[in-house]
Length: 249
Image (cartoon, rainbow, N blue to C red; front, side, top):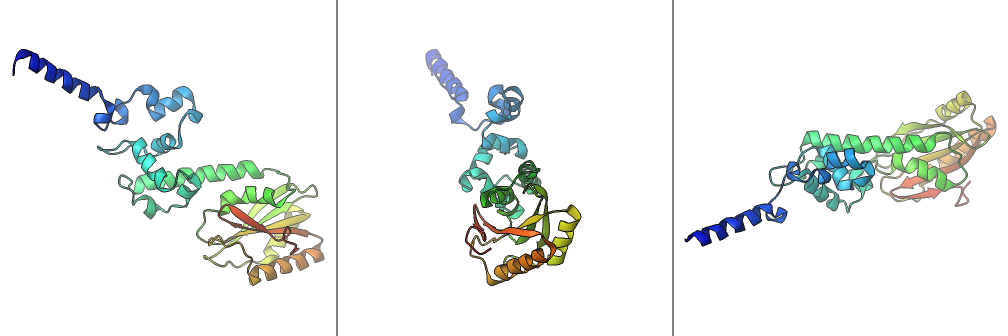
């Protein structure tokens, strides 16, 4: 190989090294403007994509895959839907190559914090006027659960929420509800009305006969105590069923 051929070969190698597509670069090799942590610090959290935010939670990728690429792969599996990501168990998250138990726990904890923040912000003395108002408050709490939970929203005279409280938690298709406990809490809070809400993990929103009987039981108890039961909402996935809207109350 002559001198000029050697120079040409070296030049080609340098071009390859400069081409990001020719190899997997770690995040540390990226421009500072493209690194998720630095990007958040310099440009704010809204400038980051879902994958970049998830990469910060994960912390690191592997030798062959950056944290951002790993995050993109995970999100692609749930069709880039964060609600669906929130439904994944630790075991399901750990099925992704590069996600161990510690990273799976970090992802689950972060998503749970986001869910709780959304719920806290949405229920503080919020006025309830429609069934959709209730759905928007309760959907973040109930839509991702693999089991049934029964909640009660306690309202004041102006139909503003005083308290939102879980009354019971059960299995995939049923939960036991103590009506007396619900009304005892209503009296403690001086609530004038309440709204019942529970979820169907199967996402079948049709109320069961036991759902109907329980609603009637609440209504009768409320009549005796002068506490109105305004509605019973069933949440399933991103949809809901309202007893009041369907003329069952």
